[in-house]
Length: 217
Ligand code: MG
Image (tube, rainbow, N blue to C red; front, side):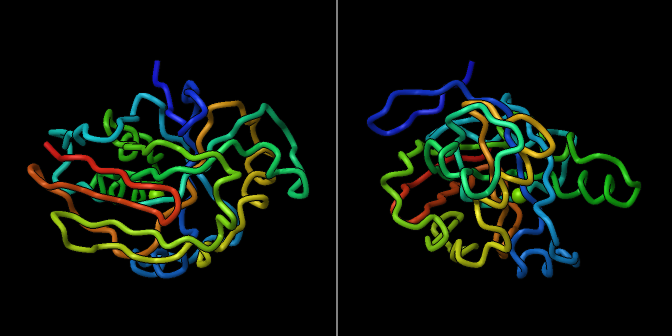
């Protein structure tokens, strides 16, 4: 069982992780992709989750593992077909998630039209921070988002550049599958993704939310 920590508000058992793709224009372009026109997503298993001060383990199956820093939305209430106008009632809080990706495995899967589950779903491939209650965040669509490796800034953007607002994302996902308490929506990464190697220290933070620091082995 994997318990998400919520500052000052206990814990929640983590559910499924729903990850958006191509939701920042500059990242879609750096990967040679067209930005999504609707909130496309895939699922990572909750067994990928690790926490502050733990290590991402590079699997022997991959020779190129990348970091992707993302704003994470924690769902607090079960819902299906949630209209955007009510979507924020289903949000419990916000955190930071690093969508760790075996880029070589993903590239092969893309070429062959195969799913991304393996490239995205290895154990340790979803480091998450402690979460803060949504009431603490005035505007989740205007937060600086950063990631550095060994002290060097690799990603820096702002959630204002997200192509989809959180209510729209929740409306879309919940039109396809039921959202449950403890589910996490990873809203996609801005540009600057790059390789991580054993021995690296990865630090990600989002202003007003907090910091996430993990090693690599
Ligand atoms: Mg991602």
